[in-house]
Image (tube, rainbow, N blue to C red; front, side, top):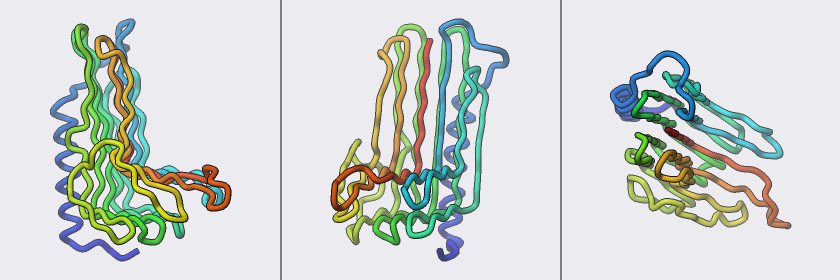
Length: 225
């Protein structure tokens, strides 16, 4: 994999700074265990590969403690032969548990992404989820999640976040879901959201059975009060 240019590094650092500011500004940790019924859950994974040939590998993954706080992981590069290449992988989770508010934010990002020998490529991938509950309402959002310079099978896509759960067929490989979103909670006392910005589902070309997956930028946030 080629070394990212200074412009790419600058863009990535800028994106990482935005994510850090969003996280630190929205979530101040309160020490001690949460009261009964109050909890936060957050997980972020910059990249994950699970295939028959490569096995299961996770890059820059973090999980938030139930009492809140902040956790982060950062690695310079990830490489799985013929499957995945990426640089500047970062994951952050942050949450607070207060008497009247429970909130959690998770982000995962990677730069210079190359999947399946260039079948899918992107300059930057960022998943960002936030969930909160205040006793009368609970909600989640994915504002800030984005894909930059995404190209799939030679077809370029507009910068930004595609419509949730956008599916694109990959001939002879399977399919990819962009901005995959999975919601949970009752919208009153709890809310949760998982965002997988790039999720490749590998299928056996003969039987069509699942044969693996590749995920880049996965973030989950859940708040309960």
